[in-house]
Image (cartoon, rainbow, N blue to C red; front, side, top):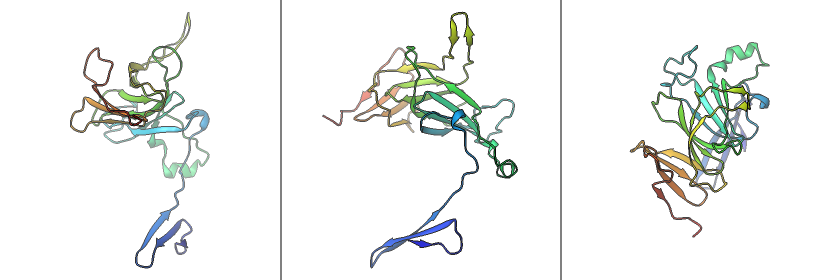
Amino acid sequence: MGGGGDDDDNVAAVAGGDDDEKQQTIVKMKHLCQSSIIASHKNFVADIVFVPPTINVDKRNPSEGKYTHFISVSEDGIVNIWDTRQVDKEQLKKTPEYIWKPFLRLDIFKQDGTGELGLSRILLSPGQNNTLFWGASDEGDLCMIDWSVKPVGQTDDGPKFAEYVKFTYESEKEYRPALALERSPFFPNLILTVHNFHFSIFKTDLENYSLPIFNSVSSVN
């Protein structure tokens, strides 16, 4: 290992043998600000995806065709939408104690009422203009979620939670987090989920169909 000149923020690493030497520069990066764990996630962040600029997340302060918001999901049942415009380098110099908070927080619950729905992966479509997204759960489910649903709050029968989850494929439940969630680049209505020992393909425009159109052979067989 060797130092990178007089700049303490750069460290150069050298590796190689007698005939082949490769040099790689490692740059130390300092964060501008960080969120408060109280106003963020209670578990590790499992996935992050930017919201397409075709979706107007903040109607009072439009994004004007730019990528300004992203969504973070976790297995704690919380979905947060963040506004990157709040992280301004010059403004943070004036207020170094600034704590970054999500623009919008969703508490996601399972449709069967058995508790919170933790997500391990999230998927949006390029160019989409609605507030729907697909999520793969920490138990293998594939769910469609709408973040525009308004919370109901207190009712005569007790607290009423917003029904953000609009549809759930429960066929691949294996009580382990889904490892990947991707959309076909050729057929937008096909979604791929990857699990511990198999992968599945769903055709999302089929009505009254709760199973994937294809399941791979299990890798443990």
